[in-house]
Length: 86
Image (cartoon, rainbow, N blue to C red):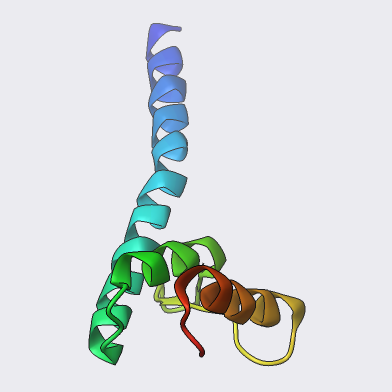
């Protein structure tokens, strides 16, 4: 009985840290992308990027693209918060 409770507690703790780790990785990806593109306010860009980014099937974070609501919101927020036109 104790072993199953321990395993359940471990599983819950791993699941709780996964979103935080993903957000951290998305932010780091945003910082790297901003620096690569030469944006002076990389922290602002990365913050917005981390909010909208999703992992693709290869595990890489990508910002929404195209003409969908998420992509438009992403571009608008980059412009309004960071002054970056994408």
